[in-house]
Length: 160
Image (tube, rainbow, N blue to C red; front, side):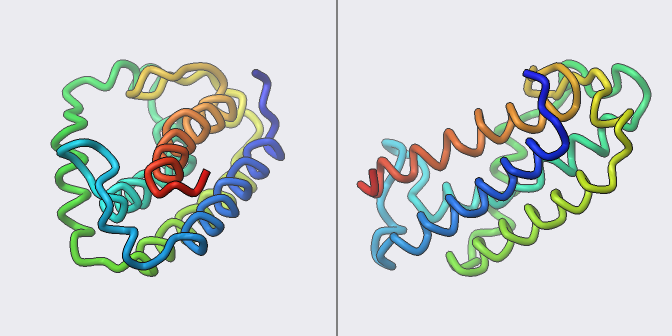
């Protein structure tokens, strides 16, 4: 892939703009619409997106650890993580979730701007099995996970 620091920042800004547009286009009553059969509604999916919106900073912090520290995920239980994060945000409004996403993305941009070039190009494997240079892992994670959920949300809300 070969993502540069500016590519990472551009993707973070683009994600923020796309989330802003989706939230602005969604009528208040639509947030209760079920996105996944028997699963999360639209507000809960936005909550999940808020919980993962700081992925760039998370990756940068993990990549600074000893070589291989993040590889494979170890005993990471994604269902437990998602349940815990969802419970923490259960009472938050859509506006509060959007504020959290914006704040996390702003923090991510600042972290990427300050990260040494050596760190941005360091080989890294995320617990979710995305690997390559840190900059590539950040972009791939945003495009794969965050944008995937954004597309699911837009489809469920019939905004596409």
